[in-house]
Length: 229
Ligand code: ATP
Ligand code: MG
Image (cartoon, rainbow, N blue to C red; front, side):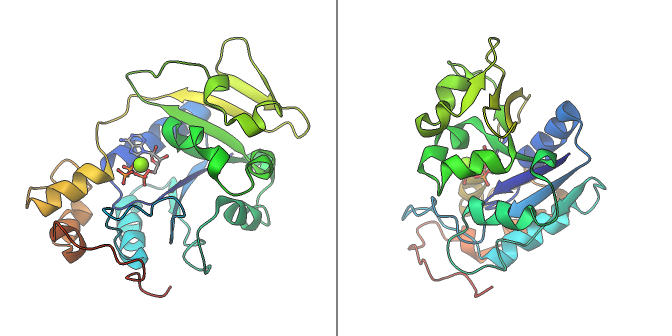
């Protein structure tokens, strides 16, 4: 089985790497493919500065280079328009079978999947691993599953897994000992001129600390700032 770790990675940090490592171990995955989102459809907040796709991709590449189990795929950067998961999975399914693909995402993102493009289709295209970080959230996997797909699944009594009624795809809840790191905190730290030591891999630390995109605190949002990719 192959893990797919999607995210804005704005920027990638040690929390992502640690989570990827833990979930690989827990699900016995062969490798993990990091897929940075070129134009995230849901990250459109005025205040959120998004580094150019080429920089985010470069940081991911350098962050994972020493780990033989980690790969990066620029699939979403090679496609124009918003980065919808349904399009990415369609492309990945040309090379992999649906039963071999596990899409990894945090519980927060998972609960919002009802707002993503084509949720019913998404859940038949791959398996999903939902990362739960301490402190454990109230509720079961069933509670967090978007309402529009809930009836497509049968849920196990222990609240840890679900099976798609027609395709055999599954959803699993995976508890991890996450690090308290977010890209939001990192962008704040860069804007304050604080060090990123122990927040991001050393190989990319100074590149991110010196990133002109993050170092200007009140940079106005410019949707077209990204380089054409
Ligand atoms: P932001 O603060 O900008 O939202 P982020 O740190 O959440 O950034 P994303 O690129 O949005 O990073 O996250 C990609 C995926 O990684 C999401 O599924 C998210 O839940 C997960 N993730 C982010 N940070 C951690 C962490 N510290 N531990 C485990 N998973 C994480
Ligand atoms: Mg996030």
